Length: 156
Image (cartoon, rainbow, N blue to C red):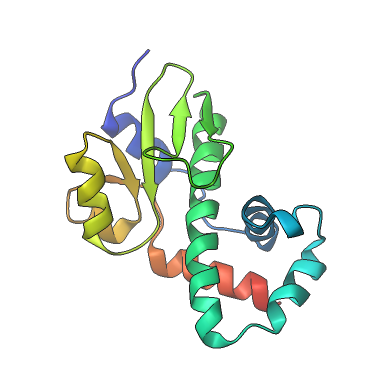
């Protein structure tokens, strides 16, 4: 069965897309191989020494990974077989469904990357800021909320 963009958006908009500290740490484990077996406390301690400038990049990276994981979880919980690719930097798409449909996931606020993916024929799931411009499926969470969750988890 193929799912329409409206079907996917309805699922995401009615799912709890708020990140817990544990989910943020799971995203870190997925993105940093040296932290793949770290406890939540070890992850927080690892980033405690980072400068504010360095944390900007960390937050951006973790937001992307965490959003992919949240979208996968929400779709799985709705009964759709969703998977994220093994590599966090998979070219093109980030999530694929059991029926073969694929999606690129964008966690920022910039139209540029989203528009590039759309011009390449990809279907995009993005933060509310991008989706509000009617160019992507709304993931049900804003980039600001993602960033706040990541910062709160990594500072706890």
